[in-house]
Structures are given as C-alpha cells and as structure tokens.
Length: 524
Image 1 (cartoon, rainbow, N blue to C red):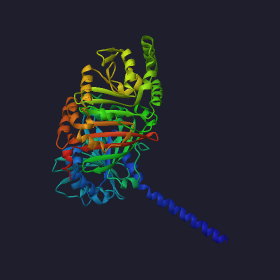
Image 2: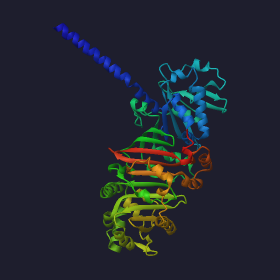
Image 3: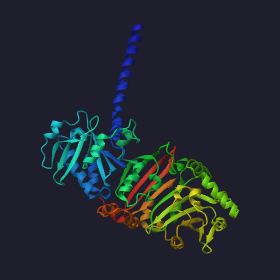
Image 4: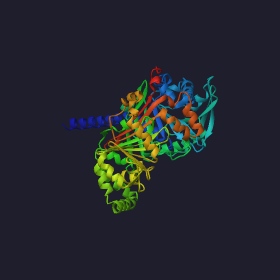
C-alpha cells in the first residue's frame, strides 16, 4: 500500500511539473508581446501591430484606405522593407509568426518618424549571416548606433538608409531615422507595460491592433499645427489614458474596437463621464451642415454629473470662483442660477466647430420656454431672441472644461436647444441652418457613416474631412498641409469618429475612418 501511495504521489508531482511547464511555455508568446511593446519609447503616440505575413501585406497593397493614411512615401518605404528585407530567404525564417509593430514618434526637429519593432524566433539573426547577404535591392553594413552594434541597410530603389539594432531578447528596432533608433536603444523600458496587450487568442483573431497613448497626442499635434493649443480632440489629448483597439476591416472603412483605460491617479474632465451609463445620442441631428469637427457629451443622470463636476472643480481650485459668481448672480438678479439650470438641463451637450472656424455650444434642455426668463435676466438682450451673458465663465463653471472658449457668449434658444457662440453672426448663421433644416444628418454620406457608429455612448469626437480642409489650411504648418493634400491622403476619407462608452470605469471604444462614397467603389 505504501508503495502504491509513493508511486501515486510521484505521478501527481510529475503531472504538476509537466502542466506548469506546458502552461508556462504556452504563455510565452503573450509575454513576448508585452516585452516587445515595452521596448518602444514612450514618445510613441500611436502603435500599430500586425502579423508579419503575406496576407496582411496583400490587403495593405490593394487597399486605398491604408495608403490614404500612411501616404505614398511611407507606403513605399514599408513595401521596400517588406519585399527586400523581411521577405529575404535568410531573414524571413527568423520572423515567421512574429508581429511587426509600427510606432509614430514626434521628434525634436519638428518632424515625425516611424519606428519598426519586431521579435525574432529562437536563435535570432546572426551577424555573419546578415553580412553575407548579397542582394541587388539593398546592401548591409555594420554601424555603431548609440555606442551599440547595429546595421545600416541601404535601399537602392529609394536611396535611403534604414538603421536597425538588437535591443533585448532578440527584439530588433529599426527606422529610416538614425536618431529615433538611437533613442530606442537608450530608452529604459518600464517593468509593466503602459498598454493592455491582447491575449494570443485575441491577437490571432484580429487583422491588426492599434495602441494609442493620449499623452503623446499633444506633442504630435504640436509638430503638425502652427499653434500647439488647437482644440481638435483637446479633451482626449489632456487625458492620461491608453487605448488598445482591434482592427475590423471593410472595403470602405477601417473600424477599431476595444477599450480605453484612464489613469486613475490623474483624473480629468473626460474621466467624469466614465461613471455614467451610455445613452442614445441625438444631438448630432442638429449639427449644422458646415460642421468640421465636434465633441459631444452625454450622461444618463445630469444631476449626478453636476455633483461630480462640483467635486472635480473643488479639487481643481475653482470652487471659490464658482461660489462667488453664483452669489453675485443671486444678489443682482434674485436667481439661484445653478439650481434653476440643473432642473432644466437634459442629458446631452456638444461643442461644434464649422468650416468657417465658428464655435458653437449646443445644450439640450427639457423646456426651452421655461429657460428663457432665466437667461434673459442674466443677459443683455440684443433683440427678443438673442442676448449676451452679463457674467464671465458661466458655461465653463456650470458645465465644465468643454466650455473653456465661451467666456461671455451670446445665446439663442431654439425649441429645446440652448445655443452659445462668441459672436451674434455665428448665432444667426446657425439659426438660419436650423430653420432651414440644413443639418449634417441630411447628407447621404453622413447617413452611411452613421450606420457604422455605436448607437449609445458617453463621449464622441467627430471629424468631417471635407469641411475640415479649410480649417487645416489655415492652421496646419505648411509641410503638414502638403502631406494632408497628397494623393492618396486623409482627404480621401469622408469622416472619422472616436466614441467612448463607459464600462467598468473604462471606456469601450469605437474608432472609425470611412472613405467617401466615390472612393469606396474604387477599392478592390
């Protein structure tokens, strides 16, 4: 009996060892993904991951969508890199089954560069094998990069050098920018990834994965725009968050779905909306036909939102200013403005910028007629419908950071919408659109685009590229606007949206880029 017990215990121990070893080895690819992405410098605003096999490149080469995003020159660089190096008979076996990471980095010389990062299979790449390659398309020589051995690959067809170096554990990074590769070599990787890396099973079921670091969007925008404080995507750009989004490919649209995680230790205005249930949104139905870009907000409980905003503003040091303003209004008009306004607010508001750089705030209310007396009493009326607020920063202090640009705005009430603008002319233009039903949702392209959107969300960013073009012409740096104008380019898209829906203190995220209708039929 003792012998049987001992044999049984030995068998159980052996089974445990084998099981642990099996699952440990099974998890290696996922850990490898974290290791690879951790080597990418934190200056990356965007990282796109995809499997380095021919099936992806076939889609990439045949789709006008990808080339419209990357531009012809970057598309050519990736094609040359893939066709001549990654597919080389000496190099390709070491990369089979591995994922390639392409990251976008703003540089100190006001340029943006791409970094290519990939892990190799066991055994890696041997120096002597690389130097022994003889190919008419490229040549390889050894190079010192940041005092570390590396290589310079010269591509004949584009007459450019590609610099590459091994980082850790057979992870290689390369770029057409020597400076960026040296930054990567000197970068100290964090012990824990900034991003939520997809599991192997999830990664195998997606065509590609997009990682977004919102903290690096502002440095990226600073490289592109003449003025760094552009308000495009501003609520997102000032939020400390990361997104991990899987690609769903359509012939006329690129759609990404996943989660945005907000740093709990660095709360922002946007993070307030993670505490509410997603709701059906309708405010976009009254966006003017001239809308270039917008930012919309929606909550299922406006009273709770006001309370959370009040706590947020208290931490931000705004409580004293807010109380002083409300006390002054009460003393001079007899109106307890916040209490009265809170009773009438509905659950949506939005900031809209038109192709003419007009700024509009559209706030949905429950009863426009009931709101009018309060607005009249705190304003100087220009006529029966239009007035200017007599007090500074009312919208900002009562509804938050989205209203920063509206200090003493003009207003008009149209049905159950309170509309704010910085000039009477902007209000009159919107009123004309409203009365004539000249809304964005009346256009054919918008209807097709809307079919790709989530019906419920809490925050939504929208861009209409046709209407955005004159805005970009005025605000982009000359070189950046040339890139935007190139063919193919982003101007070939109809629109883009970035929707955030609260889920377990995170945001389920939908990111969509759709080409114009005429472009979609040309995509094979």
